[in-house]
Image 1 (tube, rainbow, N blue to C red):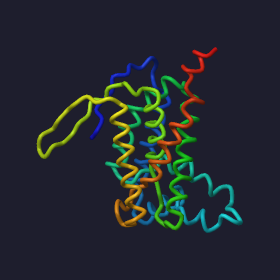
Image 2 (tube, one colour; image 1 turned 135 degrees about the vertical axis):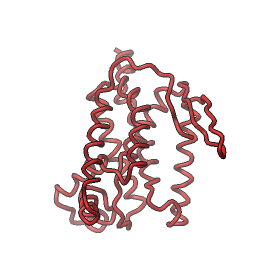
Image 3 (tube, helix red, strand yellow; image 1 turned 180 degrees about the vertical axis):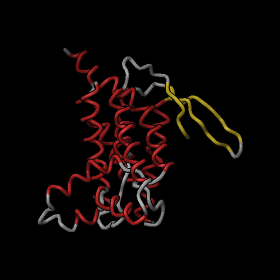
Image 4 (cartoon, one colour; image 1 turned 60 degrees about the vertical axis):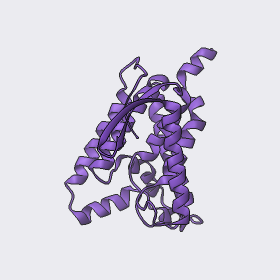
Amino acid sequence: MFPIRDTVPNRSFPSTTWLIIILCGIVFLFETTLRQKALEKFIAFFGIVPVEYTKHHRHGLPLIDYISFLTTMFLHGGWLHFLGNMWFLKIFGSKVEDRMGHKGFLIFYLIVGILASVFYIYFSPRSSMPVIGASGAIAGVMGAYYVMFPRARILTFIPIFIIPLFIEVSAFFFLGWWFLLQLFSGSLSLVLPNAGEGVAWWGHIGGFLAGIVLVPFFNRSRINKKV
């Protein structure tokens, strides 16, 4: 299932969402200018390599090495990875930002992105493959959307062989189904390490759960109602 649009109207322009998209776009275009070896070094330095953190957990790493928990959110591994992430962010992020406010949404986005990386490292402590992408942070945004707009309708594209099917489903169903797929794939990867290789399933799961847990602290509309 692929989301086309939702039914929740925006009350203000989602400037933070678009700022993140633009920054990711600039970084990705820069990546496309690098030669293969330079790109690999770039990704290894600014991405998350789990084993680098777990093998030094007793003595720690220089503070500069932890900057990767932020920079990894702005890197992508290809056009499909980049465009898919930015599309999901545009649909779900703009509405969550509308309720959290611009600054609150940015802080929320960065926190859930960091927690997604921590979650992934916990489940893949020996992995030497760099993990990059905004997926974990966007999963956190989707978790917030799941709590904030469960009754929203999502126009969804479902390819059935060669027949394109467009149906509206509730956000509760769409995001719930998406999360179950991540949970199934993540659990399968623990049993069969080569299954779904290259996808940080547990980063998606951790980001989504972090979004659900943290959304009450950032939902500005809810806070205003209490005052």
